Image (cartoon, rainbow, N blue to C red; front, side, top):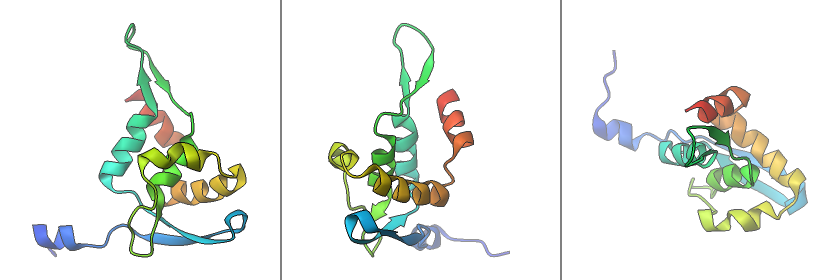
Length: 121
């Protein structure tokens, strides 16, 4: 058994990246796995709670741009976009966003089951 130290865990490069061609933008981009903090923020952004009831509702407004903003990165893995860029990113080509969104979903294990789980949280 290989027991890991705190230092080994924190030093591990565990955010794999994938190059995605986006012809609508004229080139390629890196898409990465989200950090735990980014994943929590993304899931929290999907849920709204009505203050008058305990009803949860899934919030899909600009969902592609939100996920893309959390997963587009530089070659070194640093996020390219910040939360304040989401609206501008959402105004880009839906086809380009869909292309990157699909890869981000796959790399991060996000699909219909995960969206339903976040809604029921």
